[in-house]
Amino acid sequence: METQEKVYYEEELNPEFLDTIKELSHSNEIDRCIQCGTCSSSCPDAAYMDFTPRKIIALTKGGFEETVLKSFTPWLCASCYNCQVRCPSQIKITDVMYAIKRKAIQENVYPSRFPIPVMYKEMHKILTKNGRSSELWLMLNLYLKTLNPIGLIKMAPLGLKLMKTGRMSLKKESIKNKKQLKKLLKAVKENT
Amino acid sequence: MKEYIYYPGCSVKTNAKHYEESVLPVFKILGMELQELPDWNCCGATASMSVDEEKAAAINGRLLSIAEKAQKDIIAPCAACYLSLKKANQFLKENSEDSEKILKEMKKLDLEYKGTVQVKHPVEVLLKEIGVDVIKEKVQQKLNGIKIASYYGCQVVRPFEDFDDMDYPESMDMLVQSLGVETVDFTAKTKCCGGALTANLEELGARLNYIILKEAQKKGADAIVTLCPLCLFNLEVTQDNISKIYDEDFKMPILFFSQLMGLAFGLPKEELGFSRSLIPTKQIWNKIEIGGTNV
View (cartoon, rainbow over the protein chains, first blue to last red):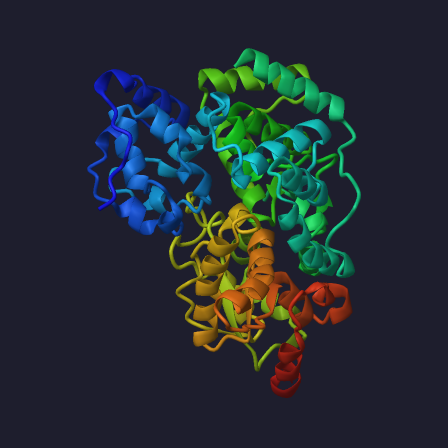
């Protein structure tokens, strides 16, 4: 029988972690979780997760900060909102997953070779710089950052098909008033 | 009724060009000429929300402010854009400490936002404001003979339940039925396609899309119609991988509902972007030509 190797003693837990996630997710309802598992059974991706959504909520309540922030689970959340609309305790579970993602990025403990956080960070970076995202450049950056040249080669036939049907452009898209957007995001970062 | 301004978003300008190519002419025929939101930026979708909530709100706040200045509500065809704008709109109207600060910074940069803009999806406007009766009047060629599974995905119906049921919505079914199309009882219509994960996680993407395609096939659908660029993309692109992993070749065409509307309104099919489909659409044409009737 496989057991989880790492044992956490109370002093290694963070009792304030629950409050942090409550604040970041604007969901005070986490307290009301009855561990019924409706979220996990509603989740289309639960089979691929290291901890199901139900477990993530329990771990968050228990202060298992490191386990939660390093988990793949929030990055496997596709934001389908099934769990959130079905939760009998009205916990905004999708928003909790977003809060965990943001905290993991902020603390720089997200799974750094996993393509999803890298893609999100890259896309956010491209759009804050140019105002728009450019799929081709996003994918190129992503494969470079995750050191995955095979992925890039596998994508080539699809890229060609998209070019042929006029559905992919080589152009780096951009807005006119980049200055305004840049100033806005800088001010927001400094003041919130 | 307030007028609408059109927010295309990045997908509709690249991989989902055929959405724009069909949705704009359809609205024009119905008497709504949609102008594009000037100098629009990307909504950030699930990416910005995963990285920085305040910035995500500001990115969308810029769009809401530009629309407010034009005294118009926003119409957003992409599901991710629709939800990002709605979430930011809610966030900015909450009067929280953070939202007040963001609004203050926006105002300094000539982006004042008072919170008056509503965000709508084209399907919502077509059904609730224009109405099936007006749409039926514009139909020149009934599309009898084809069976369609209408697929809504997630973000237009959840978490905001503003215009349709979140598990079994029917608005898009009603729209295409008004064109003479038969729709199947498609219980997978709000199952997830994997969104932004599908392009990067092959096995997961193949599995989620297999379930949707298989259900549509079992119900006898000739094609799937959708209202979301990313859903369309995922359902098309994963079919190659699915045939490798599951040894099943669906060859299921995936279309935008607006392409069928344009076709029924008598627009030439060459102008509606059918040639941009990655899956051959020939089987649909055979059926429409055999079973289609002129009104």
